[in-house]
Image 1 (tube, helix red, strand yellow):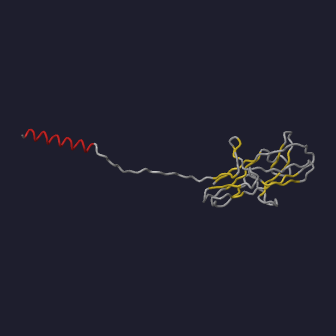
Image 2 (image 1 turned 45 degrees about the horizontal axis):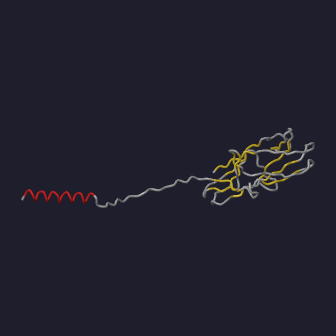
Image 3 (image 1 turned 120 degrees about the vertical axis):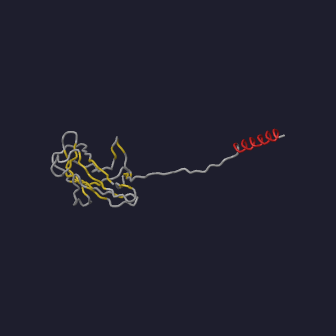
Length: 179
C-alpha cells in the first residue's frame, strides 16, 4: 500500500506543479517617456530659396531714371512686417551682413546693380526717418522673446544719380539670426 500511496502522492504533487506552471501571471512595470527641446527661432512668413532662408524684401518699387531718392521697408514674404518668433526666454539678434555690391557707388554704403556695371547707391536704417544708419555688421537686438512674433524694422533709402540707364537693379544682403 505504501507503493500505491506513494504513487498517488507523487501524481498529486506533479499535478499541483503543472497547474501552477499554467496559472495566469501578472507583471507590472513602466515605460519611460521624454522629449528634449532646444531653443529655436523662425522667420514668420519667410521661405527658402535653395538652401538660404529668406528674411524678406526691400522693394523700392518702380520709378524713372531721374529720381532723387526712393524709400522702402523690409517686408516679410507675405507683405507684412518682417517678424521673428523664438522660444520663450530667447534673446534673438538679427545681424546685417554685407551685400553683393557694397561700396561700389558714391552716395550710399551699399549699391543695387544692373547687369551692365551701373549702380544705384542705398543705405539701410533702423528708423523710417533715415537717421540711424545700419552699417554692414550692425546688430538689431529684439529683446527677450515671449514666444510671440517680434517685428524687425529695417528701412532703406536709395539715392538717384545722373546717367543711370533704365533697367532692373538688385542686391542681396547677408543676414544672420542668433538666439
